[in-house]
Length: 156
Image 1 (cartoon, rainbow, N blue to C red):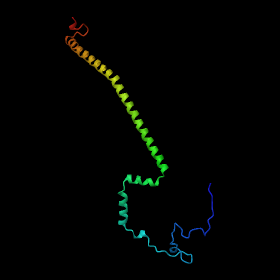
Image 2: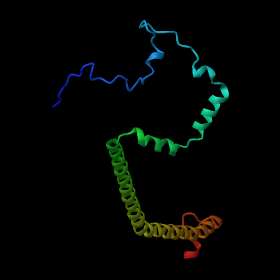
Image 3: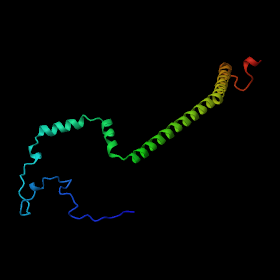
Image 4: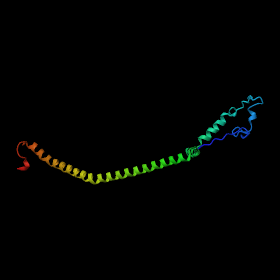
């Protein structure tokens, strides 16, 4: 519960902590604002000063900028961000590990099952080609003799 207390003008400090004790520069005795010189520091800056400031900023690395955020971001928010990053890292690592294991199982299974099948198919194709090459001379002999309807010459 909040308790309010009244502060009188006598209890208030004479110097405002935000303004300091140089209030006399801004008001004259009549209570009116006096003319303040327009000598701003911004008018005194030249392009060389601005370029020097820009060079200081451009020399700052990304790591330096993240380190400066430590002062800006509250500790509870930093803890939540850290927890989220750690959780995402663990999830990514676990997913990668699972996918790698699955790829290994699929690849070795395919090698053990499909490699023998592929070798047998290749062996059968080679046998069919060899049989076709063996029939070619007999067909050529039939065409040369002209006996297309009777038994082959080699079979007599």
